[in-house]
Length: 387
Image (cartoon, rainbow, N blue to C red):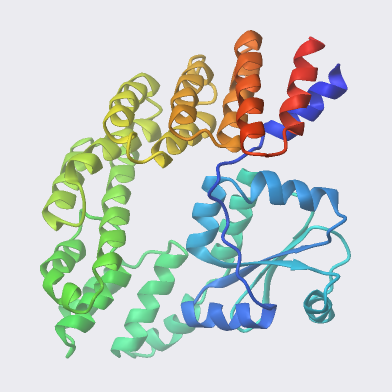
């Protein structure tokens, strides 16, 4: 029975959502070229088809929503079968002796970080952050800056690289703009898109003043991303300094920027504030209202709340029972095999075995109607029969 239970947990415990890492379609040298164009690192999953840990990562880790969000935003991602011609070509330059091997390369092909062995989602994200943080190009620009170079290109690249590795950049940015450089409004707007890190700053206010220039240049999406990141950074700052008024200010600044649904953002800001503050009761109250209002049209919102329950509130006694409720609603709206698996695992964790059996049978029926494999659900029934 313990062995069967282990199989069930292996099948379900790390089952992610349907959105995960988007892998580059092409050879590894082409991935490096793409990285050069987008100024990103390349993440390489060097695997072999016969490798068990490789298969588990591909199925249970790379598919997770939180993993996909982080890696898609920060890297060009490449899966490389090391027994193919392209894999052997890669291996001749970057030797791989165990699988999986996870590598991070810069666009010049220089190795930034390399580790072997399978990782869980949180460990993989932490590894990505370490790789990103260790790739610090700001020093190259700092030398020229200290020598007196204040050219637009140098300043733009310098503050961008400082912000990539979370180094202080605000004074450098303010000093540059206060020197009244001979740059166009569009250049200033692009500089601010790189320089702004939080909404409670003069830099942010200057960015919003140039909104029309940004729109003319077709950079509305970049502005929307920056506004959301900056306002959410100020929400996090409100927690750090125990100053809730910053949340109100961030919401007002998001509203005035006119880049999205301000009412929805207001709820998201307070959800984030209470999550970071560890205020589970208030977070849950807000989450219920938020999902009721916006979850009908956007199923990914349910997934985001499940991630918060799993990662941020896992020690709360009510977290798993509430996650069951959230997942039940998600399955009603999107009855995919992954969502059924998530729901069943939560029911098993809560020892709600009768419900788990009922939901598993529903999943089997649904899979049969779609001519999908039911093996993992059949094993759950076998497990339930033995407890």
